[in-house]
Amino acid sequence: MPAWQSIAILVGRLIFAAVFLMAAVFKFMDMTTTAAYIDSAGFPAPLLLAWLAAIFECLLVICFLTGAYFTEASLLAAVYVVFLAFAFHGPSRWTGNQAEFGFFVDHFTFLAGLLFAAVHGPGRILALRRTVLGRA
Image 1 (cartoon, rainbow, N blue to C red):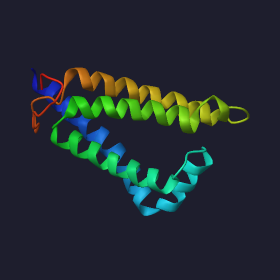
Image 2 (tube, helix red, strand yellow):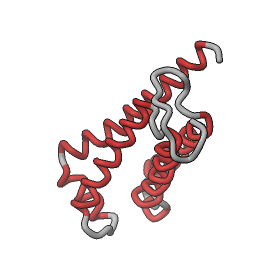
Image 3 (cartoon, rainbow, N blue to C red):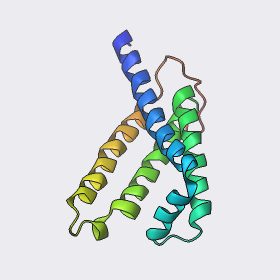
C-alpha cells in the first residue's frame, strides 16, 4: 500500500475520533442540556441516555484512535449515526425548518464514510489490530 493511502486512512481515523470526541465533550460539559434535548425527542430516562451516549462516544474515540475493534466500532457508529438522524433530525422536524433536513442528510454522508471504513479497516499505521468480526 502506498504511503499516501496509509496516511489518508490514519487522517480519516483521526477525523472520526475528533467528531465523536467533540460530541462527548459537549455532553460532559452540559449533561443537563443534552438530557433536555433527548427529553424533547420523547425518550425516557434522558439523563441516563445522555450519560450512556457520552460514554459510548468515548469508547468509539478509543477504537478509532487505536484501531482496536475498528470494524466493530465503525459499524456501531454507523447504526448510531442513523439512529441520531431519524430521532433528532427526521421528517417530523423538517416542516418549516430546512436546516433540519440538511442535518438529516449530513448524517448519511457520515454513514457512508463509516461503512467504507468498516470494510477497509484501520490501515497499517498505529493500529492495534484486534477484532471480533474477523480479518483486522
